[in-house]
Length: 127
Image (tube, rainbow, N blue to C red; front, top):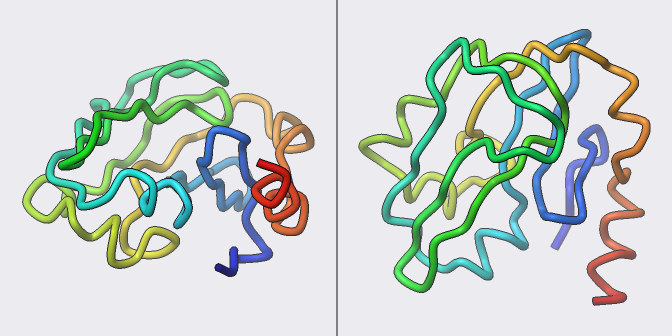
């Protein structure tokens, strides 16, 4: 399993693609694989303020319901509305078309505490 090297990762299996003060957020291939077939996604409303580590979204699969945590603090500026009718997109392309939200981050330095791709892969191998 390869993880995009430009992304940052959390130990709770979220990814962040940070460009300036905007962060595209999703769940990793590892997370979607553990969840199984995703059947429903509950996304926050645009404008919702989130704190790093707080609940950002909920992903429901045939196996379980999982919370997605905000990898950074900020405000939701866009949600992936395609997931409302096609939640399986997360299974098909978790690091691409299966993104969840875009945050306008309030503190870009929070990315410094996230794992890079090799650190995330090492974390998975330790688990």
